[in-house]
Structures are given as C-alpha cells and as structure tokens.
Image (cartoon, rainbow, N blue to C red; front, side, top):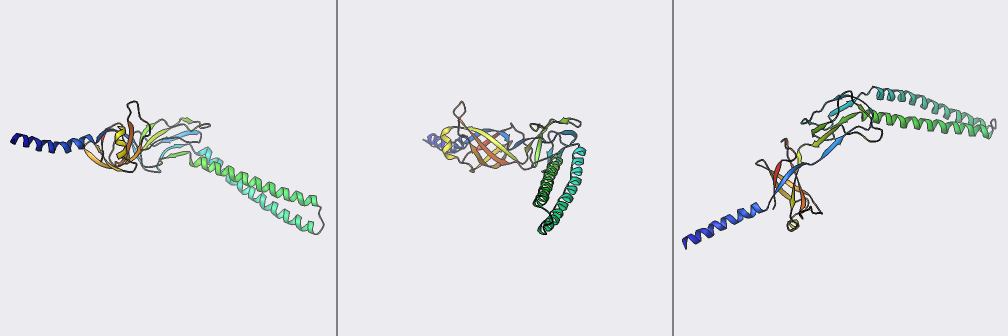
Length: 252
C-alpha cells in the first residue's frame, strides 16, 4: 500500500508538468517587419553606408545617389519661379490698367478680354512651374534612402557607381528588418484555437530566455496537415535574434 501511495503522489506531481509541456508549441523566429528599400529616382549611386548585419537608426542615410543633376534642376526651377511670379504681377497690373481704360470707354471689349486671358495664362504658367519645382524637390529628397525605422540590414544589392533606372518600378537596393521586435510562428491544432485570440498575452522562450509576447495573428486556413499558423510578437530589445532560430510558445 505504501508503494501505491508513493506512486499516486508521484503521478500527481508529474501530471501538471506534463500539462505545461503539452501546452507548449515549437516555433521558428521570423522578422516582424521586413522591407525592401529602393528609390523612385533614377541616377548613379554615390555612396552606400550600410552592410548586412549592421544595426541602423531610424532616418539614417543608407544610400545616396549623385544629387548634382537633381540639385541643378531645383536651382533652375527656383529661378524660373521668380520670373513667372514677376510675369503674373505684370499681368495683374496690365489688367488693372486695361480695366480702368475700359471703364473710361477708351478701350474695346476685345482689349479687356485679351488682358484677362493674359492674366489667366500667367497664373497657369506659375502653377505649372510650382508643380515642376515640387516634383524636383521630391526627387532630390528621395535620392537618398533612409532607414524607415530602427532596423537590421539584411541585404545589400547596390554599390557606388551603379546606375539606378526607376522608370517603371523602384529597384530593391537594400533589405532591412525592424529591430527590437520579432515574431514566433508555430502551427497549432484546430482544437486549441478556441483558447486563443489576437492580443492575448503569451510567453516566448528563445535560447533559454523568456520574452513576454502577444498573439498577433491566427491563420484562417490550415496547411496540408490541418494545422493553423499562429504568430506571436514579442520585444527582443537590443538582443540580436535571427530569423529561423527555434523558439517555444508557452500557451495559457
């Protein structure tokens, strides 16, 4: 009887541990956000300040095209805009003079109509120049690729002297992944789905360390084995974790 009692106690102590173990899911790490960076501007790459494995800050310049032709276009349009503004001012003054003479019956309707047409043309020309200048400034700004967020550089597909042609579609030049945040992805059986919901807190264990995470997404379609993808997002802080590393999601 003593042996039976000891066995029952041992079994009672083992069952909770087995339950905890059973509620854990093997997972693999993935990047929470992975972005291919390019530029919509055509030109020649002047410098590349990023290498794979480097951590970069948000807004940091990673790549720059030779901006001289773009800057020259902005400068030329700035000067042109000044001239177009003078033309508009003169057209307004001319309309005022014409209107005054017309009211004194010294000019015909045709002369007044011509002055109004000239003013409308000057206004349209000024707006066109402003639009061209806005486009030129935009191209100058985007001749540099900046990190959209604190990130790890994953790939570099650009070198100084390389020509970038972005007529139809921006060519991927760098690939980065958001730093400080990772995903643990596991496949879960359908009978466990009812106990989970987006935003729910769960723990993720990676290389002996536990990270507090939240359920980000639960798939709606099963894979070939009838299991559904479960994504848990967690903060990795300054710790360097790599996509593909094994992890374990501890379910409630």
